[in-house]
Amino acid sequence: MSYPPNSDIIDRLVVIEPGSGLDRIRAGRKQARENIQKSYLALFQPRDYGQFPLFERRAVAAFIAGLHREPASAAFYVSEISSEPELADVIAREAGRGAVQGPYGRYPEGPLSTEDRPGLAYRVADEHRKLLGERLAAGLEHAHLLVFHPRDASQEALRALQKAGWSTTDIVTLSQLIAYLAFQIRVAAGLRELAASL
Amino acid sequence: MAEAVLTHPQNAEPYLFTQDELGWLPWLEPLSEPELTDRHREALVEPSRIKSPYFMLLARDSGILETRTKTDKDIFYNPDGGLPRAERELAAAATSRFNGCIFCASVHARFASTYSKRREDVQRLLEIGTTADLDERWNAIVSASIALTATPIEFGRAHIDRLRATGLDNAAIADVINSAAFFNWANRLMLSLGEPTPPNRV
Image (cartoon, rainbow over all chains, first blue to last red; front, side):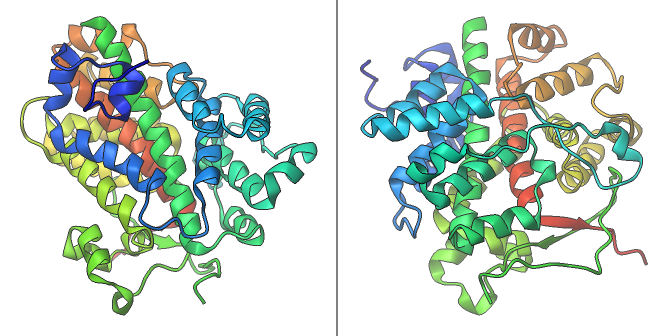
């Protein structure tokens, strides 16, 4: 599909035409609009990749989009890894294994314990760990935790990342990438519904 | 050492949602002030954030920190049209309540109370949860926020129609979407990079 020249990632995911009702609504929050796009670029075209290379970022993104089961976002992020078909296939299978319902998780012990909801403690399948490598497998496991049950996050979860080779700074980037996509996928989904209602 | 995970054995984590002013302790080493370059300072945007362990930890990746901060500011502080500030904060608080982020909920419940003057209603959202009956307009905003927060996303035409029926225009509906969506970003960072602390009692 060919996109209008100045369309950003949200415009592409929602299919927002210049001059349309939704284009005008988005124009009312210009700085947010620009920085949602710049955030995407800061994560996927940063000045410095650190030890978190582009193909890993795209793999994590495709996994997260698959977990959300939002077709437009999933199609976009999956297409970004389509040049590595074996990786794309494993990511798709793992997203299928991991796609549950959230948010779930536990609260600190006390009155809120009545709201505890158990759920999947996701692990990448053994047969996929070799292709992915321990770093990326640990990254996917952390992504699943944050997507579906962030209230179960812990120091243990961070130690698991460190053990798999993630530096402190790269953990910050990974966390931002996961959390940004949780935001961006929702903005696209919400605005798509709004556009359809105009 | 920068690569260690930080523990806080003396901290007794809050175990209730509250409007009290909580603290937050990081699980990873934030940057120290002497380590900050001009680029870091630019990315932090507000000089006061140099005192925040949360923002000094996020400063390790200055690119995304800066763009995130500017996104946040426009969604919540832009006064032109759209949803009143109180109700953007309500969407943030409801999202945080649903995701289970005690720290985020405390901050944004407090802002929602300050701007709306409806402290008791905000308190009921915290104590009862997102099924609390506040009034139709607030119920519609909470319902839309949590539908957008669920994974898979449950937000649909019915949520938009309900918001419109209570008087929100399209710009205000977009603000609900942006505010609730943004807290899906914020909650995941705050919950996974550190822990809340009880308020300092005088």
